[in-house]
Length: 307
Length: 44
Image 1 (cartoon, each protein chain N blue to C red):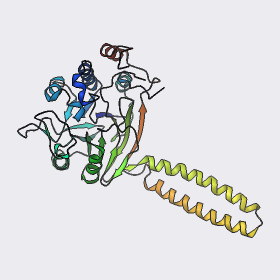
Image 2: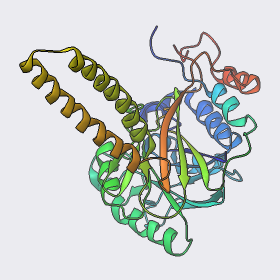
Image 3: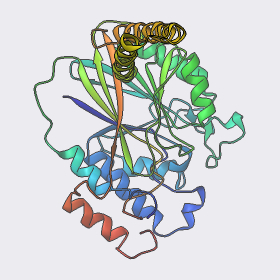
Image 4: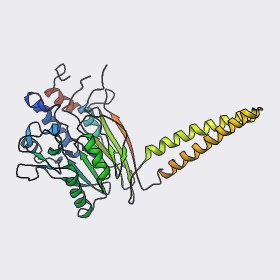
């Protein structure tokens, strides 16, 4: 199946004070090299990617296939510092990938001198409009390197956005949440997981969560087993009061089963646009690429403080 | 033992493996990472 790898930002540095740490720069360089080598198409520029400044990022990604994106980071003159988005075709589907960074006006953004974050909402709205109308993309993903609260607001209001992938607070794994017009996806954190979003895209309309349908089918099976048990008891039960109680329970289970069946049918695989989110855990049981492992050990030798 | 180790090298192997062919058109997989925070190696 065709694969598109994206990073939601805040990949390069642990803290904003990492600029003082001599080991932080080679780690950030290795990460940028590897994101490119591993075929990532885009990464949002987060607050913790800007520790060594904009020039560091531009120099290290010059000529790379990996594109750093931000629709709202501007210089002191108000000029964009990065492309707002990239467009790529994967599996016959034209995908617009948009980056967004923290807004200076929110008060919590700590950006290098001469770098400003414009308000998130208007920057995203304008770029999504361009992607939908001029580029004619079929799918829009926002890589939102902004605080969670800001990402929720974005997902609730950004018409034309299919998925918002949030990084900033290190929230880890979670469920994809429908938020108004789009779906908010947690990408995992600290290299421990990869979020895997399997999409089936045919036609228009909102995406349905196949996980929900699968959960509904699983619950339906459990309720059907309970129904069978209640029916068995009813056959054997002679006491009228107990029989009435069992019949009420049976009716309740049957109503629950029917509701679950409707959920499963409404969001089943027949629906044109569906997704399923799972996480790949990158634990000790996942084999390492030997060449990359050597490079890692050069910047962070086994037994060093980083281990 | 604390949290699982971050594995840049493991991620490399995962993404560089040859992709399995045969999927229907307009089906795709999006892989996302985020909040990596400068991690490159196992740290237990």
